[in-house]
Amino acid sequence: MFSFLNKNQSTGEVEELHLDEANIPAHVAIIMDGNGRWAQQRHLPRIAGHKQGMDTVKTVATAASHLGVKVLTLYAFSTENWKRPTAEVNYLMKLPVDFFGTFVPDLIKNNIRVKVMGYTDKLPAATQKAVRDAIADTANCTGMVLNFALNYGGRAEIVTAVQKLAEAVKAGKLDPAAIDEVAIDQQLMTADLAELRDPDLLIRTSGEERLSNFMLWQVAYSEFVFTQQHWPDFDQTALEQAIYEYQQRHRRFGGLTPAKG
Image 1 (spheres, one colour):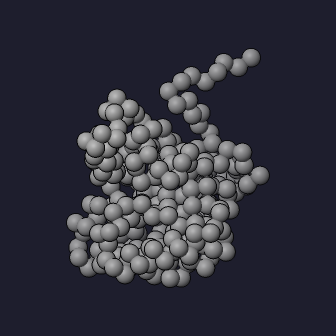
Image 2 (image 1 turned 90 degrees about the horizontal axis):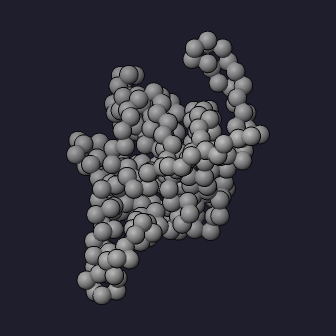
């Protein structure tokens, strides 16, 4: 049984809570928000927040693996993030190079495999190489999948999937009547995750309560947890608290909970 200490927001008292090891969400997705606000609160440049956020990724990925999470998907850079100032975008493009350059040995040690989804062909060459190398270096790991959404957008993903299906119909390889949820699933960027493709738990940090174009198809029945903590302050305890909240809910997937007794 996993135990952690939690400060009760109502009473201020510290209490020990327990996680049900049999009910750890198999797929956790996180919208990592608040790096810039974290830095601004400390009168630091925004890039300082992104650097600290990179260290948080290491902490949370290791903690998730130890808790038994099978897939951890992190929203690292969206298709809309190109609108940010050029200097900030250039720094964000360097982060995967620095991250994988220092953390891959720890990923291998913890048996964590790297996966990246998104339009990576649009990334700078050095970023693309860092991604390819990390995927190759961890290919034999059989534990948790650390899945980065990099230059990713949920609407663009669905458009691309529809285009692939349309091409198959045009080529006479697919009957339009055969297009169902499974067919669409198979064309999405999460297809190779098989039964783990849809997140059980979606966490967003920094107080915002929106999806921001993240995994729009896959989160249809995910449980959402929103926290006020900025991403650089998110840690193992925060992850455990989110999972604890998840475990207090009853997932019915549109059905009804069977009557007891």
